Image (cartoon, rainbow, N blue to C red; front, side):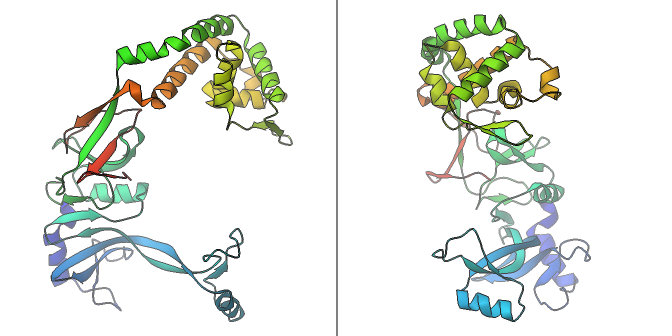
Length: 342
């Protein structure tokens, strides 16, 4: 964040006039970019700089009488939220636009992350202010900062403070990941061996259209479908996983079909939904059931591991260094308390 470090912003306040109508609002770069600016404020004895980008709306509760009076006077920012119950204190609200704060520059030259969320535009802007880049990586837990040149890597959470020049964290944190214990996992999966063997043989000996037709009949029997006029049908997937689990040993093929539908493995769910339709992409492009089986097995194994922590062991990673991508998620702790990554 060298571009917006404390020294540079202080220099701006001394050499650049504030925006018209204010005494504490200054541009970060081009003056015409008037929604990308900072505000000078006092926090105790310290002078801090609030970095803002754009505007965000906030809701404030009002009474029904205030709403009716505002409507009668033609005031546009009072609203009756139709989907909220009359007993909800936020049934009638007043909308106000406020500068959207994305961080605070403090006298110790740190940038504190204060926004409720960071979108792609925010990440792009902040990347331009630093040597690395900000982005969202689901396999690293969420929002991250990555600088290959200086070998600096951080997960980003609300309240985190980074030095603007070195991008090192000023508050210690601990990143803990998970790793599958191979031997324990192998023993755990023994209960699925027969299911995998039977479903493997049966799926690979079937034609694609027969597999989809049988899956279609199966969900119809379960009464979990709803017809959408002209758009195939929809399937309620809430209980499919438990239905599949209950058939694991008694009806392995049915179980495999339900798992494929529940996780939409290689678009199986969509194919089942559109089975009775004609002249669509799915009817003219048959599935490779060998690939479907392999994909289902990989997906199911991941689901099994994710739902059974006994096959995992925690792995601590060094603060500020890149940690490996993972399907199992990470946790971040600060002063012994878990914090939520953006």
